[in-house]
Length: 442
Image 1 (cartoon, rainbow, N blue to C red):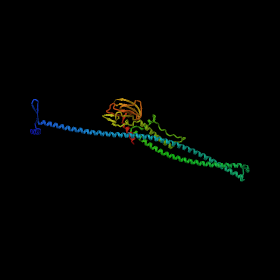
Image 2 (cartoon, rainbow, N blue to C red; image 1 turned 30 degrees about the vertical axis):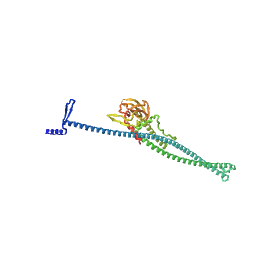
Image 3 (cartoon, one colour; image 1 turned 90 degrees about the vertical axis):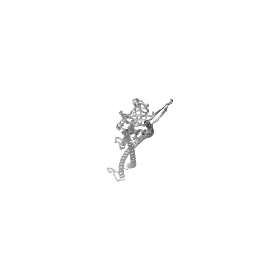
Image 4 (cartoon, rainbow, N blue to C red; image 1 turned 90 degrees about the horizontal axis):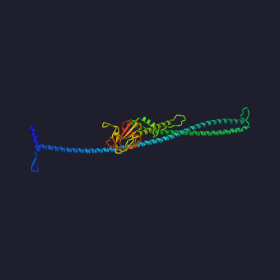
């Protein structure tokens, strides 16, 4: 059975690949031949077919990979361009919000000056009202005294007139001497003058009462105007403080201790707003004074937040277009303690907050490194630089140019390795950047 199968296969091969002979002739007129059996021809044909098929498939794979990689690169470039455009828009929007915050601060200062002037005017009006009340009391006292004198003079005049006409007698039964006419005339003139003075005093008192009523109306109008201004200021301060407080809490910073630290030392950037003080002559402060001081305290808190924001790293270290190449976290089995920003070689690098340069030089895998010590125990690091523009001990402000992007140290390409450390413990820099973006975008 097996021999029949082999014979059938051999016959099929001989029919498909009949035996061939390849003749070779040499220069010596000798002729030789090479015998090509059906099995040898089958092997040659199979090898050739496999090689051709492999060449076709490999070429197809290479073409498909080339086309696919080209599309992926173009798509990556488009996404990078869109991402950089969005980052530029966010940066412009953040700057616009910062400008708006400064304008709001200026408007608050103007409103504060206006409140101070209005308070001064109100106090002057209150002093004039009190003086007028005292003047009215003096006038009323004088008027009552004058009326008493007038009544007494009128009684004396009636008595003298009766005595002159013989209707009355002096004590002891004596009649009045004609020489007393001069005394009667004097008393009549005094009575007339007293009546004129009384009328003048009454007119003066009426004018004083009208003036007091007018000043009272003016005082009420000022109080209503002050109440509207206070309400607007209270709303504006609340709306301004809420996002700032949210920004610090989102970054994980304790707001109370930070504000206390900023209040304890201002380093020439402005101090606390002084509460209003009024001359109350020993009286308790009025409701408006307390309200104004409450607004000043909130504005002082907002001013402290503004100073603290300059001292914490809420800004981006790169202002030019860039792309994120590696984030904070475990990478390749090791902890990556910062965020990488990639851009062209020599791109300027800027300080993200006010502080003092604590290190500027070469450090192991960091390459050219700058460390900046900030308030609240925060430190920022800028690694792999091509050029360092600051020195140890130098005080820098947010936005100062501290170096250029490079590829120094243990680096696989041009980029900035940016770290934020709190108490020498690395934290995610994007926590601060995202907290500031969430505030300035709203």
